Image 1: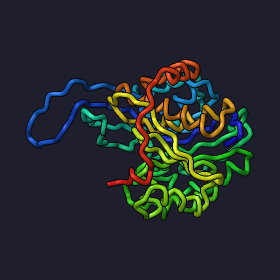
Image 2: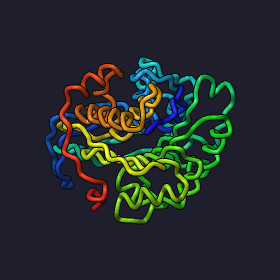
Image 3: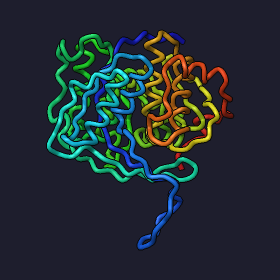
Length: 327
């Protein structure tokens, strides 16, 4: 199943200061729970995907809005350290977005999020000037649901990206407002690659079966749908049909940001000229390395090191998307 080779990536999304607490099995008000670790990490859909692309050797430019504070300084320096171009990131008087991630012993997580500067991001649709898009061939929109203004502009932004000669992808994310297809539906005809997880696909399509939901999203305009299934791997839904791709077996420590890293891995493999199957396998590997460590991007490795890890990694048992519907 061939795929077009991607050049560099322009990534629009958020950058978040994460505080990861593990393990948290339950909450009981007015009590104290002892935990093993409380750590600070870089998070955010845009930043995590951009970091993954950068460490995997893909030219990438990040569009985001952050505060004029020390967390922003720290994480922008870390992004630049793996080659991410952060020159277009906007600094705001509002605080850098922050999330407290409560993670249980299985790697499941619950987020407490302060949007901060993200509330001021993308007040106007992105203008794809020759300078902004120079050296890049693909536009990735990372979770428009996390960016209040982007909800209004997303379709126009994707359409402008295509008009500027860029291919497009969209990682859906979780819609805390419950509007789902109402806001995202108009974007689908402008989207070449749609990256929902299983529950997001079902919420968007209004269906319980994941495979049926992915098929419906293609009917609504998305050219190809890549459904992230966590420990079960992923499934590709394209004009050539349905392709299941098993995951790799790892002991999950923290699943925060694994989906963002998966997207970065998929796009990085396309950048190297890999076909759909190889891109999906590589994306599964990048996500697996992400969940082995606390923090979204701590466990990521360069492209060649990731391929070396794949060569000795153990595949996980496969379970079809249709049997992995949301509960």
